Length: 153
Image 1 (cartoon, rainbow, N blue to C red):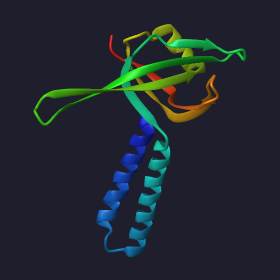
Image 2 (image 1 turned 30 degrees about the horizontal axis):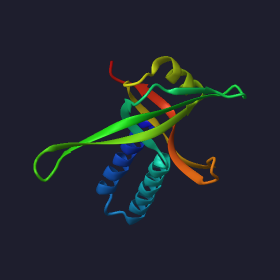
Image 3 (image 1 turned 90 degrees about the vertical axis):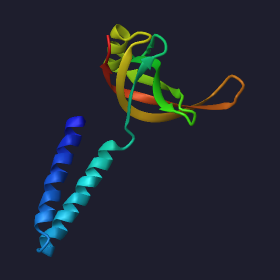
């Protein structure tokens, strides 16, 4: 994914430099502008519903082996953001994210990832709903992880 994005950015820079040198030929400039717009659309479509997070696992992953033979890993990661408030004090804001992973990614998580480990994940946001025991409809939003990078120690 990152290599593809860098490719598009390099391509955009080439188009941009050609645009600067060809200001006197309007037909060619129009074509270059259309190419730039197409390139921007390609980049935006590549980034559609994409989540990238770096954080630490709050608990050991929950591994579920389904009857179909599929494997599911569920875990949560904490991301931290630090800033200074009006009084100049450092404030750390922690956000928790629910993450699920399927198949081989779940296998890797089961074998190598434990509570406290720092990981980088990439995936997409999904929202699902269900009815609880009292018949109330509940909703949750999760990150479906398709890439995992183990960081730290």
